[in-house]
Length: 219
Image (cartoon, rainbow, N blue to C red; front, top):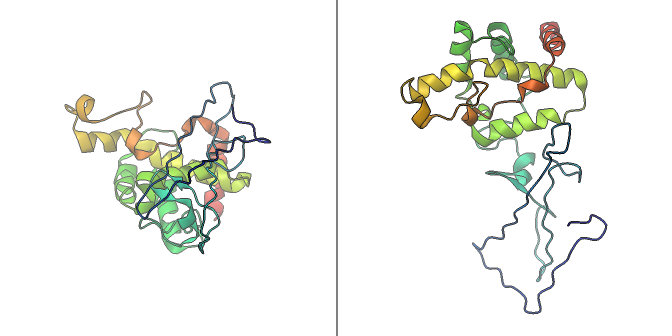
């Protein structure tokens, strides 16, 4: 078992030569079934943390001393303004006009943890085309919300994402068709489309949803 104070270090009598294009892969397995709260990705040992440390020679100049990757996203790229077409630093900052427009459209037309509204479906259909709300970027941005310490800001984003997800089933049916749903679509028991990176809506309390809506109206 891994011990933080005394990690295992493997030394090779015959050094391993790494050439351009070679890949070093580390696989970590997490078991958090005994915990009573969600375990998220992070650098703390109490979170889903996985690092591989290597010593190498000769010395080369690297921009970063260390780097990690989450699915298709390099965490080292997080310093860039744009990743996979998504300006991730802008999402959540409602002082930016485009972000403010997205938040306003969702909060005024969709109901958090409620039924899909016709107006909401039209809005969400367009927003889901945005690169920040697709694939790994969508999932990673949602996971980062869980780790936000500011309760007001966190509640506002939780309310936004649960409202955004209120039409997941309808969008899945549009993509797959009702007759082919069992064959081509994977739908969770609660009616959420797996591929959309569905947010953990069960973390939200109805009172928090009301507060998030009121906070949004204040802005």
